[in-house]
Every structure is written in structure tokens, then in C-alpha cells.
Image 1 (tube, rainbow, N blue to C red):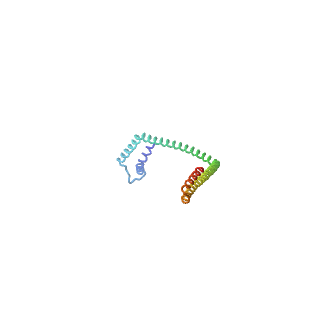
Image 2: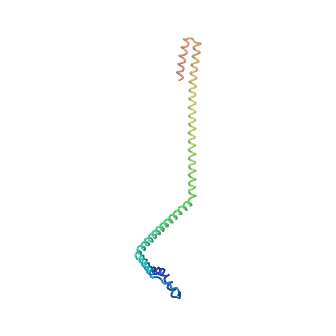
Length: 189
């Protein structure tokens, strides 16, 4: 059918010229040369041969493209369905999240309050421990200072006594006082 339409289109100018000569176009009759007719026949044969020999490969080529397009359309439809399912799933999760928003917020607030109370308790324990350690350190330092003062006072009084004894007392009295002092120190320790 297509071949006939193509042939008609190619031969239409020759038919028009021929009809013009018949209908009284008269005084200048246009005659189509035989070489043009032979060339038209050769072109028609060439086109018919091309169509006849390449018809199967063209049909298979476009059939393959049609199959590829159908496969791509099928994949696209599957991907669309999967995307719609994922969209519904995400929409459900979002709705669930929004419905549990207040509950989650209350849980977070309660957890924050628990942490706050725990931190306050720990801080109180740490401050009590630091206060106890500071009091103990102050006691120990006071006792150490008192001990040092006693030792210094004892050393100073021994030195002062030695100075007094060496100036005012004789050798025998000095010996006697030193022995008494040593005995007295041993008893106080």
C-alpha cells in the first residue's frame, strides 16, 4: 500500500503534464521524454528493492526498540509502585512519630529531671567529701603545727636553761640539773 502511494507521488508530475496536454493545453504540447520515464521506472525499482530487502531488518530493529521501550516502561512502573509503597511507609512512620511526639517529649523531660537529680546528689556527695577532707586536713595541720611549736618551745627552753645554768651555776650543780632535766623529759614523753 505504501509502495503505491510513493509511486503515485513520484509519478504525479508526469500525470499532470499528460492531462494538461489532453484538456486543451493544446498549442504547446508537453511530451515527457522517454529517458525520464526510464529513470522513473529505475527509481521505482530501486525503491521497491530497498523496501523488499531491508523490510525484515527494519521491522526487527523497530520491534527490538519496541520491546526495549516496553521493558523500560515495565521497570518504570515497578519502580513507581515501589516508590509509592515507600512513600506510604514513610507517611505512616511520620504519622506514628507525630502521634507519639508528646509521649516522647514527656519521657525525655522525665529522663532529664532524673539526670538533674542524680547530678545534684552526686554534687552534694562530692562537696560533703571535700568538706570532710578539708576538716581532716585542717586538724592534721593544726596538730602538726602544735607539735612543731612544742618541739621548738622545748628546744628554746633547753637552750635558755643551758645558758642560765652555764652562767649562774657551778659545774656540780649543772651536772645535777641536767640529769634531773633529762629524767623529766623522759617521763613526759
